Length: 147
Image (cartoon, rainbow, N blue to C red; front, top):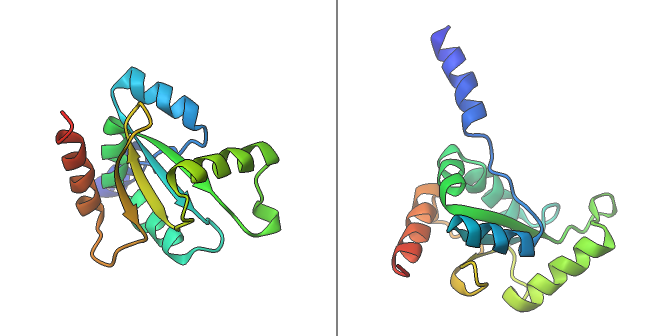
């Protein structure tokens, strides 16, 4: 019984981190809280590697714990299905982000950005060798090298 209660509590403590969609708000939050921005370009309803990356890495407990302490998360989604379409304002916002940070239209593309909007590191696709702890390690090293 204790194990069940412990697992139940753990699922609340390490819920998937919250991804925002307002980059300007993310920059302000990152500056105020001395964090970096992780911007993920995805096609949530058509891109297999995007869906896998979200499920396997971004929704993991390890990533949630790291992200909550170190990152402001932003997702720029480009869904294709009519039922998943974003409003015109959000679509325009995501397209502007893509022009600046993903002008080749790669999916998924994950970009580590400082609070000034400068790219620190990019990850293209979902590399077969990528793991949650591997990504966390790469992010941490990228941040540490800038200190």
